[in-house]
Image (cartoon, rainbow, N blue to C red; front, top):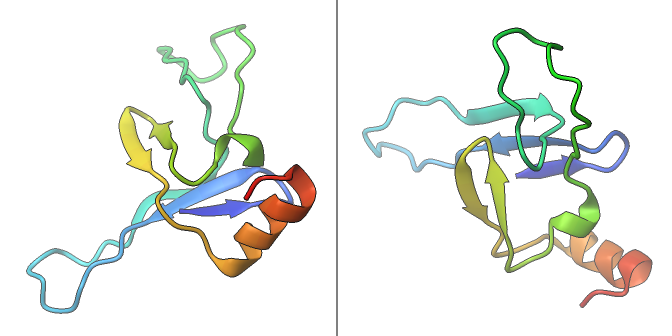
Length: 92
């Protein structure tokens, strides 16, 4: 999972091993804003509900994130993310 701080967008890539027998489609979700609770309508823009999107405060290591009905566990972060959470949000 990659989170872009500039515009609060998320992309989800699948990491598969070579010769695993799976088709090579690495993108599970292309770069987009992901709502916390998706509003399903018949047509885009039909709902007047205010959607809440994921922010860095929601993506903490050890928590699960619901991405369009799939539960994704955040179990590790890179060094930059670890330092960012420590300095900006006070989370270790």
